[in-house]
Length: 328
Image (cartoon, rainbow, N blue to C red; front, side, top):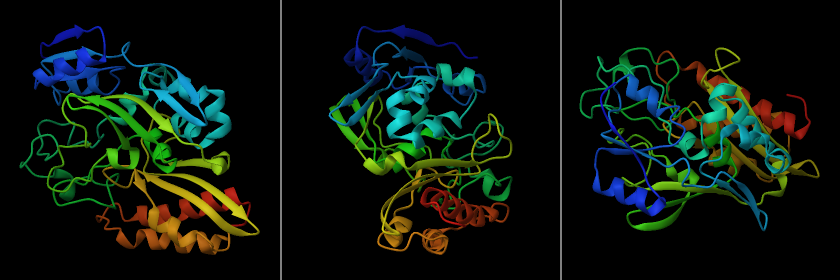
């Protein structure tokens, strides 16, 4: 591991100031992703600013909106009674990720900012546009079974690894930040970027901008929600495809719906096309399948991950059919 300077500061504004003045500095919270990347020499920060004690580790009900402090651990988030009762999809998504030991340490803010698990990104001996812009994307002609089928570019086909972020995107969550330019609120669906010609940029955050909390607005039918994850093994594996879904059915028709996908793009993918197709339609497996097909019209799989297209279709259909209580 390369030498670095570890620094603690008194408050959020001091942390932001340090990063704004130090291009090679990064924030450290739980460190469950960053420390791994440092060991692999993918990341080599000159300064680590510890923010674990600077942001809230509490979950608060603010007139129906659930405010989740950035330092809330994944374990605490999954176990919280309000989360389990009002947003079961979020609790299920968190429990589907990593291992109990990592969930005990990983934070809400850090989970959102974790970087891709693409093997080429983590291997400094191979070309990777995300790690070294302009060097090429090894995955396109190499091993890409786990990679993107939606929103990818010639520069990058990596996928975002978070389970929690997929559920939060489906729930219309909002991220609160503080940065050199002050405080701002960012819809979580807009926090992460598609790769385009700048795959090295995972999010829209400026250097030094710190996530302080996440707001989950009220959504009555979120009590009827579910998270499903297809993976190669049942523990400590990243999603090949995941689906976060919430469904509101009245008189046999879809009154409202939320669907987000994981494991298919450089960012958690909000399936807005599928949602639009479904509203007002009969709550049947056939309608759910048509909606999935509409979302997948934009899919552009690589030779070894085209199976994901059928997998997405089956998972959207199955998750919504289960929520509606109808046969698949």
